[in-house]
Length: 386
Image 1 (spheres, helix red, strand yellow):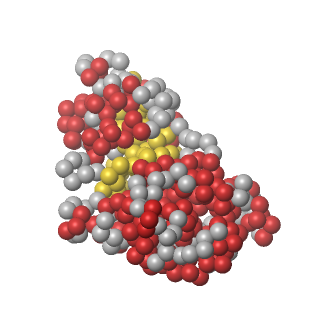
Image 2 (tube, rainbow, N blue to C red):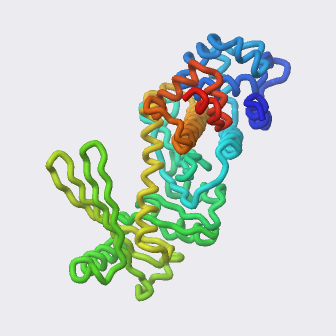
Image 3 (spheres, helix red, strand yellow):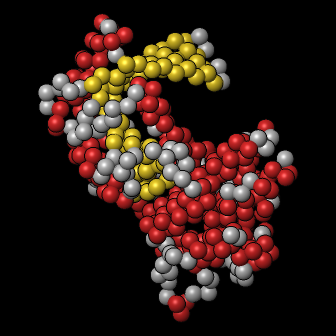
């Protein structure tokens, strides 16, 4: 399938709410330009228009785009597009290109820092995202409104996801009875960190796990991992305990395990140790649980990359819908680039200088064939030129 046909298929499903009598540029053309520009590393609206101007011949030849939008038109249209529909379109594009799905869905919120002082938005924007840690695809997201917080929004997000047979991870904020119940009713499992926001549960799990680890650690199922990167050494130890004996266990739907994870980090001669606690509905091995706990880090990494790669925290757009739509396009670009580079590395064709995601965006900016390959997840061209 051609890249033009694939993009057209997904963007044609998005409603155009503009008055037909006043439409001079097709919505599909504007969204196609936006997707291509973001994939080529252009995060600002004026840069996206400049990209279109510099690549007008290719856009006309490949997509049939005869007329380019101005910055004001691009801004206005992206403010009108439904984030729900754009999210469905980008999700379809990513799933069709990348394929498959993972067992773990990590859920976490991210603030867009530049919006915190914008009077037009009343309160800084925070977006709660559900992230497939295997494919790097954002499966769904909702804005956390000014009169609420992430906890009820999590309950709104879960029904939008296919959680049957999958494992939900989240930070301690989401260690809530209602959230556990919703996941179990949906056919999923959970691994949630426990902190002092659940004071009673925290005291119980801390007391039980600390005592058992100190007195007889060999009686617990354990697993270990080691990691060394950039002069930093990290040793993790995971301890499991079944909680069939726990009074009041039934108040936490599906609860089966208490988990403690020790992190021993050595960096620049300093050694520090910390212990974290988790609950889970799973009955898996310590090795599996340790992997799941580590997988949650991937959504935090994705949020970090939104800032480092696309400077999202510096985005000065003063409209919530436009911010949401740009956020969706950035996440789409990250997922497509990450999976493309991973496939290239797995094929053995990746050169050392090709490993950077930012560098791959630059290649998309300079070479249309690379951009098309990223959208279609086709590594054939890259292998021929490696």
